Image (cartoon, rainbow, N blue to C red; front, side, top):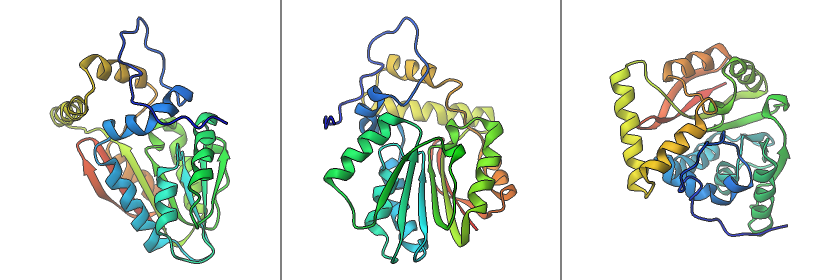
Amino acid sequence: MSTQEPQNDTLYAQAQTEVARFIFDERVVQVFPDMINRSVPGYSTILLMIGELAARYAQAHSRCYDLGCSLGGASFAMAKRIQAPGVDIHAIDSSPAMINRFAQLLETDAPACPISLTQADILDCDIHNASVVVLNFTLQFIPRDQRCKLLRRIADGMLAGGILILSEKICFDDQKHDDLVQDLHHFFKASNGYSEMEIAQKRNALENVLLPETLEQHRQRLLDSGLQNPNVWFQCFNFASLIAFK
């Protein structure tokens, strides 16, 4: 099993005749830590606070879920902070490359709170006895017509008093404001060393793959799923994280 160190994100640094559809393959895995920290404003803060929220809401002898876990940033954040007894974390991702690399990281830094890994489509996974469920920049990659069904299944599998944390790239109904925050996000990425060509090619790769929605659409869907009090606890530009309660 390879234990390569993470690399700097240069996936779109060279001009491409045809930009391929973005997928979470081995190439992305190798640069993912650099990619997400340079692309998502406040990402490290979101992870830190996911750990704190899990510490507050994880119930004894329950499960925490990290759905679309990638390399386990949210899983590790929860595992380091949870003190309730008998809690285990279930991390699920459809990408074999992500799960394989996550397994390597667990071999070298296994937390006291156990983390189990499953390579599967989260649309097919059973959720039960859940006190904390995290969708950290995951729902945006799920087809819009399947999002309600997924959230209802999650809500049905949650314990009373449990929480769902939903982080997403968002859009705005007001076109002028949407254009502004997109420009600010591009400035953020440029400030982190991405060229205009890299930003443009990454945007093309994600077109029709990452499908953002408004905060109101997210709030209404959470309510329709049987969850309560969905509110934003973090936002920077067009990136936000909401919390909702069972």
